[in-house]
Length: 131
Image (cartoon, rainbow, N blue to C red; front, side):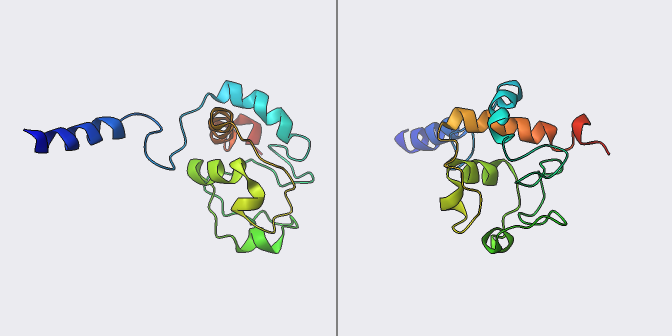
């Protein structure tokens, strides 16, 4: 009977949101919108500022917005933006991509990151991005 208990427990824990190692927790896009105001010092959804725009971010290769002057480190990073890569990058941009010119210490709180990622996922191809 014991040999069945461990797999059962592991499957139950794996079913819990955010339990899988490295998987970002599900976030609240409305809370993420408030967190995004911090990003607006350098970024906007629909146009480039000091940082590149975020429309079309999900599924886009890092360092690939035409006409934006990225660091060589970002262009060579090989990152494709999704919830997991955004979570890792936003936690500590300079550690995730050494040599990035994004001089921001990151969003340390996992819940805030999850909320911000949920907002970016929602907005990536949302109405504010229609051209």
